[in-house]
Image: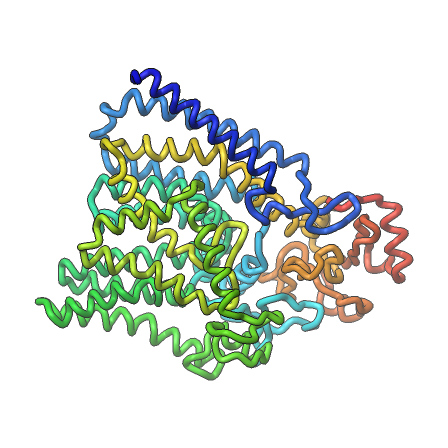
Length: 590
């Protein structure tokens, strides 16, 4: 077969694969259940429908594919000329690509709306820290201000998450640019994964790993959110790189930086530094015991650990009266009084969940499959990672870093919450990032000839843009629309400096979006322009509302027969007035 016929055969094979992908998607149902957001015209929840505006994302995916194809052709023609290009140039380009992908998803697909209740809690904590407070004062009416993962304990109104990531978000909150934090962290992860991969393998593999990090749907779509995985992953990858440097150099600064980074990651999320840092830390301890320069290494590791662990324990004691109670324990044990010793184990769990070994096995398999697809938007990414590890398994540093991935799966087998999310397997975000250098190593080892990293990245991005990305962006778009309905209605109605009282969303059917969105804080320096308070089906107390919100206009909101009723509180006289408002305004739900 001539070279020309091989190219034609390859092109026909690629086209056939894309057609097969969408044929299976049509025949077997959508790629992922997250695409089932939305409501039918009759107001039935979870009915699959495609909003008219979503078609533009399919058009955008097509245009992106066309641009990638043109870019790819240009690279193929000039690969020899660009082979000696500066490493910094390509790293900067990949970091910029990661920022644009994450920022574009946040701005255009999510439109700044939260995907989960967790983001609302992180925003609450960031606003509180930005105002110079660790926790907020209790709200005027605990029932009206009830929100999942927010609790009141020892006279403090707080979120269940640790302070590390909200502190990062608070910097963006003060600058009015909180939406840029995630994309910036996604961009920062690119050079950090380059450094880690170079320490594990070699520079060409490291540059390829940086490119894969730039186009990973897992990193890009999570980078579009306010989730703490972004901060935790950056700090863990930085810590792993510094641990490997410390093992090699024996320098105090490397050991100190490694301990400081992993300790700071512990302030964001405890799971990731504990599981992914365990084996590399053991490698460092072996180096301290058996190798030279043990005292600088030991001193740096101990000092870095003390500077992060001791303040964390003192803060916990100051807030909750115990050195070992984090915000998580204060919420579940102090506020919710949930009788569970640990979230890891089998038996009763929150929300009437009973965790069993079978459920753990099912969640593990689903997360592995989701991780395999979300790493690059293509299947078999984890197989490439396994191949890359196998080729380099003789190196102790490679075994130590890779060990954190199966350890994460083993530990989360006992965790009651599956962790599947619209942006991928969120509990495995950091493990997925650590896998990318191994994916690059497997890809580099499997190629018959050296390929410029940008060529490989453009090729993979092109294929994913024709298959995975359209379905994924559609799911994210629907999820954002479902979670932003009430605030969007308030924006459309032109509400400013207002308080909206509402019941549970009647269309939610008990899912996570049955909680009112918003930050109902009584202090002006913490509050948003429009606050949303839950009534729980009880009448609104006008006197309480007027006393606590004297400078805001008060409204009542409810969905009635598929229509949105938004009525000034002064005009509210009961259900009949809301029904009349729904008929007069004739505002169908978005």
